[in-house]
Amino acid sequence: MKLLGYTGGELSGGTFYKGEGCSSCRQTGYTGRTAVHEMLLPDEHVRDAVLKNETTHVLRKISIESTGLVTLFENGIYKASKGITTIEEVLRCLPRLVPPRPLAEIKRLLGG
Image (cartoon, rainbow, N blue to C red; front, side, top):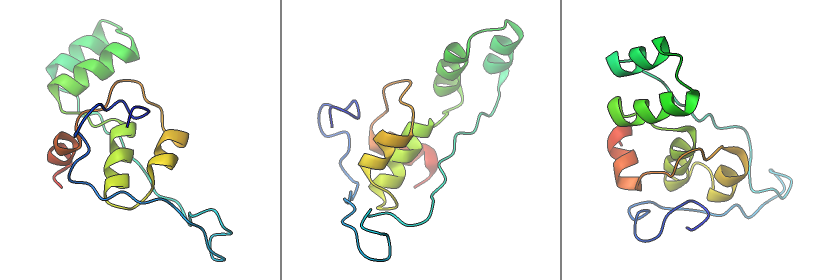
């Protein structure tokens, strides 16, 4: 939980798994690929920041606050909570640029 940036019960409501491995996955615990997404829907705040040539860090912060942007890392946590991937893969593959929000908030934003 500390590696994810959580301190308490922020991950409650999820079912998390750990890959065990078998002959089909060559003992890795994973098969195939799963996409994670981050989509920026610009609003007036984001447009103003773009016009001011703000940094990507500032754009991301504004997008999270004003448009409800779900980051790649948060989308990975959501997919791990659904059993689609594991926390280990999320930590290994996805950038954690800002502290993630609680799982309940991520689920609300993603409609699930």
